[in-house]
Length: 228
Image (cartoon, rainbow, N blue to C red):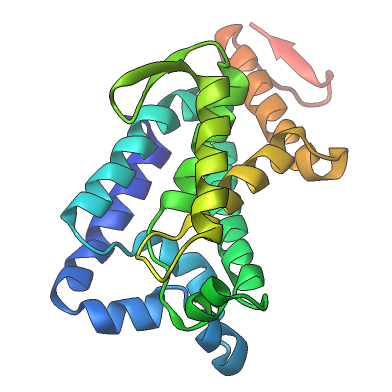
């Protein structure tokens, strides 16, 4: 268990407890309700919705994904870069929900007044990152079928897209899932400006590890490096 993954899981569990006892209040206040964001300025919901869950199964499944895919990503990137990526995917998923809720078709109207909750959008972003880094590794699709990660993420994306189009007011936020996938991909593989900050963080973390490994630290007047 890596530090950022542990902190994310603890934060979700802590916020789940009041959600379990007062679900309507928590979902309307801290879930993502586009109507409240646009008309009443509840901008914090773009962040807080990702830490609110509906039931025990919901939070257990999402935190299992955070642990399964997040630990290796954090080990590779470092805690700061991993946390930043996780939150960008969560906010990107929220932005997708807000944008789709304004479109003129049936499911969008229902989404506009409904509360979207859960870390699923961020989890889909983690899945995308993991598939980009380890494309040929196999995962059990639906816990049954072994599929390479690069194909599994395409299947999940297609399911989220077509399920969202055919949604009739169900409880699954398919467009949040799709938003997490797309934003995660764009951040890692999109235009250089979107990727620069994360890559810089990864580079700094790798240099810090090398400096520690070879006992190198910043020097004083004698030069930028002192080796002992």
